[in-house]
Image (cartoon, rainbow, N blue to C red; front, side, top):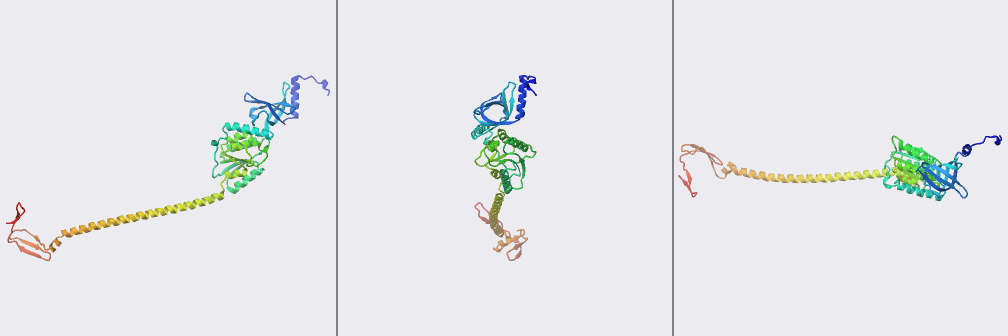
Length: 377
């Protein structure tokens, strides 16, 4: 078709057609460059230029899509859709930003770390301990990752028999952070939540581990109502997810060790505690036995002393009884006279060895004067 025969287009129609052609040719593309002239407007809109040595393109995105700490001079890769505006200005509508290059990655890490730390996400006082004897745990990882295999092996060796919920997700690359976030949210929505949530992956390059510096993921870990253990990379690696977790493990293997007790060590400790309890019980019984024996000896001594006192009292009473016994008096030569002391009356005289009956023929009265002298009348 001869283009000269086409009806003329208005500027707006031309720009709309050109924009559609552009979007059709490049529905989503990744562009890498240096950030310049970054500004946030109304707390919602992010504008910046992406440039290299010879070119520059304007970029726009929503602030909620920005999950890295962005500033001028950082080298980034943006996932974006090209747009041609009604004013004829070419720009990129950005969907995702990630730092590239060691300098930019480190800069993003430090900026985001400082901001989240100021908000209190890494504060020690908000850290929660993991239970000593877990029965139900969850793990978020890629089943294809070596770190996952190490984690599961150590778990089964140390403390088998637990319920383990596995949330299979990619642990690197585009979209991995969102998949991990959704897994955390699903875990937290369970009617019966696990006691611990482990997020693990093995080692990798700085680029591979960038997913664990994603701001939204870090916030999801900090907000989890299930205590979190993060074991990512090797002992020399540090991510913001590590800092936000309740417990940081240096490797997936270490994460398994921190979550579970060692069954062999537990059995040994229980045996030692049982022996200690046995010794304590035996010692307590021995002490009680000695105490009872001592109390029994004291009771016997008190009874013996009481018996001696009673025997002495009994002997004294017997002596007094003997003293007051008429027979004893008669034995000493006295006599007991029964009857009326009247002339002509018969009386009985009892001596120790015999009885005498006699008639009263004479009665002599005895009186005592003022001086105590006895007189017979």
